[in-house]
Amino acid sequence: MRKKHMMTTVALMLLTAALTYCITLYASEREYNAKLAGLSDREAEYAKIAEVRGYIDKYYVGEFDEKTINDGALYGMVAMLGDRWSYYLTAEQFASVVNSTNSKIVGIGVNASYDTDRQAVLVLDVYEDSPAEYAKIQPFDRIVSVDGEDVAKIGYDAAIKRITGTVGTAVSLTIEREGASFPINLSITRRELDVQSVKSKILDGNLGYVKISSFDANVDKDVASAIENLKKANVRGIIFDVRNNPGGLLQVMVNTLDPLLPEGIIIKEENKKGEATTHFSDANELNLPMAVLTNEYSISAAEFFAAALQETDKAEIVGEATTGKGLAQSQIQLKDGSGLILSVSKYFTGRGESLEDTGGIKPDIVVELTEEEEKNFYLLTEAQDRQLQAAITAVNERISKATQNPVSDEAE
Picture 1 (tube, rainbow, N blue to C red):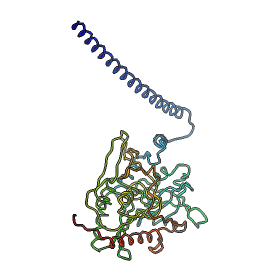
Picture 2 (cartoon, one colour):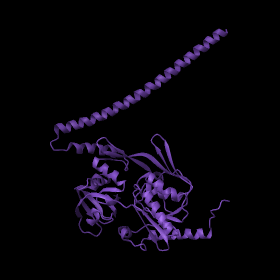
Picture 3 (cartoon, rainbow, N blue to C red):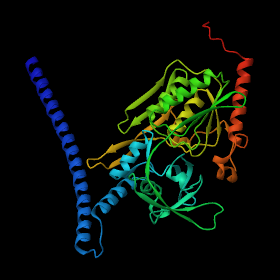
Picture 4 (spheres, rainbow, N blue to C red):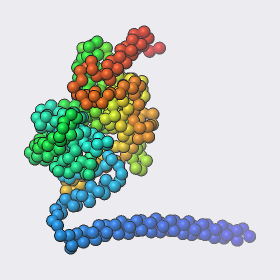
């Protein structure tokens, strides 16, 4: 009886093993078939592209440049992702983008954003000693056409790609300017520019001011140097200005923030697989009252810079709500030198918030500029800049509170 029971047990074990094998085999076959179906679908799509190209080659009566239509197909593929932060670049354009993150720009020398109402490239800043400055382009000019193509037709990203290009080549622009009766047509020769992304000074009342135009290479070192110089001058507080800052390199932003913040999480990023990377600050922090100036053109790294200081209560955020960009892009170079700027991960603040979901950083003190003030933004004096004046007031109030409630550095 026992032997029979043992044989039954062995039979059940064999049956279980067989079932496990069948289930595993079935699951593997399903996965393989799913992949095969996906591969077939993709091959069918590529075949469709080849079919269209065949008809163009066989029947199209006009002339065309093969490289141009291939680039156009790649532009379209990435554009149809529906992600405004991802795009395809030709080899020349990709090289220009890489240079720009190294504090070198090939182009005309403007900091720009998109005017969605007028569907134009909105000039935010004109760099000193640049082709744009010599051509007398002004902040808040709107570029409506690039090399004869309307920006409204080709889109913002394509327009920016066409404005950047090869050193020594010319780009034709049509510009609309407030108060001008007719559009302004310009031909500007591109060249390589060294960009000074950090500027600092001491304001009345012995307050430090640090303007960060972007978080490009070495900006963290430049900001650290500026802060050290301001500390040597015994400033009572510091105002950081990231208005019209389009962002930049994540690690540079982290390095810039670390000396300012107490120990904790600065920013978290999560890739497509759900794998997370967390960036921390150490216990060393800057114990000076601070404020950060933001506006709707503070984007990406500029927003997270403000978010970290706001969440740790290290600074008052003054001005306008930021853009709300919570995706991180990677620069991917292709074999022929062209490249992709592709969103590859999601960003979260130290508290775990996505700026895509929150709609950007909301200021602690809201100060909105009038249309006239925005038009003349770079011409405003310190006294005329109401956002700056509100930041000065906010820092002075923090100084006053710190004086009334001094914090002891001694351990209890």
